[in-house]
Length: 325
Image 1 (cartoon, rainbow, N blue to C red):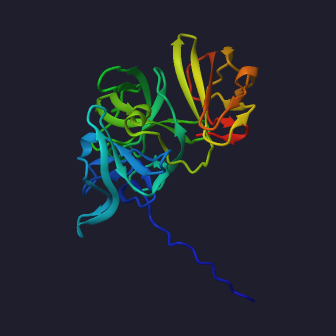
Image 2 (image 1 turned 45 degrees about the horizontal axis):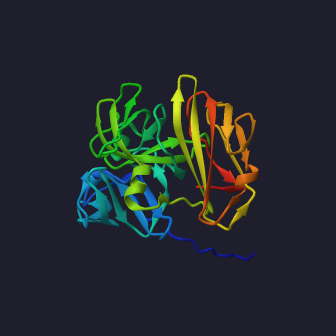
């Protein structure tokens, strides 16, 4: 009998309270002991630079951020240094070479995580969750049923939401933590980072504004993709809504395209423009018109539709069979 040996990397314990690189959203972070929560691991799609997104009010530019701080030894794992922030929008990015594509959704001392597969524009009526470090210690997981109410068009660009069950929407130490939408398959879409709360009232900064502040930020997904999709609800009413979809091509030039997705809540397309639509159950396929078949490298096409039911962010999007971020 032959015995063979397989060498593997040493297993490392991971949790919100003791994260390790690559760094996940939802972990407790601070100069020393946790004072805030990591939002999302992100990358600049143009430069591939890595960051952790969190809240500006948590600390100053140049400050070091740690996880797993040991009060006995006065040491912890360095995530990186804060390199940029926006005071009005209450966002900050921490430079790191190893951002991860997951976030913690369990308690403070377990490894329960969800995969981040993209990001979503936010819109009134959308239901979201926030997964802050302190709330995880209090209730053993994220706070969900956060209904988006308003997106202010002022210097702060704050989004307000309400916890529909009347529970505490967030707690001290949740600041900077991930706000996200849950897909039917259990994966999640980055929606923003926690800023403030009061009882069931909740304020957060949306991910789209962070992109405006820091460049072409995208979640640090493990999915290598040559396409990106923006899904924006442009109008809504009691029985339906309108949406604009923009498809960005980051790969070779395309001549002839087909975009597919699945609706999350039984929505049915009622009207459409700039594309040829087919729907079978929740599955929708949109192909090009004669005059918009080509998408050059770095180019984009857009189309729109109206649908009945409540607005919901479809996922995943596939372009000619390739999953898009």
